Image 1 (cartoon, rainbow, N blue to C red):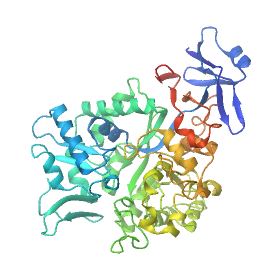
Image 2 (spheres, rainbow, N blue to C red; image 1 turned 180 degrees about the vertical axis):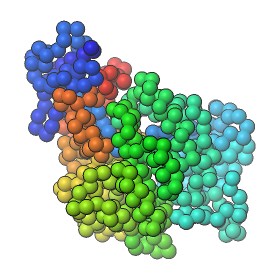
Image 3 (cartoon, rainbow, N blue to C red; image 1 turned 90 degrees about the vertical axis):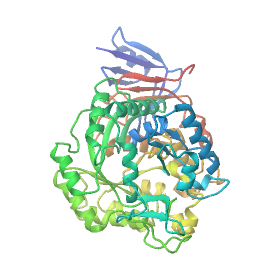
Image 4 (spheres, one colour; image 1 turned 135 degrees about the horizontal axis):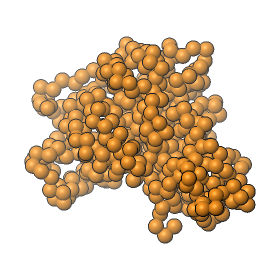
Length: 523
């Protein structure tokens, strides 16, 4: 038996209840309460951890991200902070010079955003990449192809005035390019997963709902996960498995990979579908044309005729479904598909929609009809508040990112980061949810502050609601006896600090399953 007594702490149990100490025995919480009471319950040989009065919260649960891609982003060409086309080129050239990849290696970069470029606010093109290098194939994500390429349904391929490919591929048209760098060895996948898990532990994330199992690579990726999870993993994993065709998903199911299969460390979760693209690229599927480009309503990557059999196949196997849907047209389409399989206002499989960005009030209210889950990313406000009114108009923007409304309506709303689209850091995510400001502090007063959450509801969305999304609300997301000992020690009391100073809060230590997997030096 191993035991740890966390003492001299400010343990968050629930709104209005904080305790002084917590006892962990064999990976689970055995007692929470006054220090004298908890100490009396502790074994004589229990290890003591002095929290020094700091606040302890449940481990953060990121309800939607891409852990493997986070590892890729951490190890490949990192473009998140590039502020110009010229800087993208400089970063890429320095990477090549420093790493000296083998000739012909496919090099991958991600995280750039043309709206941050100060020289030319435009998408990168093939000429830009050729200017970096013609020796290496380069795939730069904004988050086997030749001139005869034709865009598939639900995708687009850009061309210049002469009809020549300009190097811009959107949504379903990206697949041939992405396959160039996603096909790696099992050993490479293991290294990438471990790299991302280390980052998760450093940020206080103890569970991830990750979309890494995809058509074509899922067997090797799954084997890598199985090896990692058998050898001191730093994070619990709930797979959101992405298959855009019924045949591919049926093969996955026939291999026994159904929702809930696994253990406390590693389990299969829902089918993950993609219904549209992104707001920044104007590929999110809207009910009306974009205000700043009336020629398009975005891209629907799945038709209603394609969505229905996918959802039906999952439900028939007692499996959940979560679907990427950003535009109001995509959200409406997915709610229609879910309503067709829910009965009597109940959602026992916990079907959900990821992102839920552009909405009006009636669309948000539709989530309550069958208890559909919303897996949202408040950190998106950092960028999207700069563009959303231009894209969809002030009226629709005012009812979008409606986190406060979702909370008031009782919708099960959990937080994620979509890492590596945004960094996995929960503190910045909480800052955006509570203040509705960009990380730089704008706009003054917050973007539609009526949709702000208080810090208690924000922390609960990152813990208890994340646990609910994976059917774990009785073992995760709270610091209560019998629950898994996943917790985070924070440098400041996030519940009493000035909300505008939430970003000053640091993760001092992370415990997963009773073991400290991260401790900040000199904390």
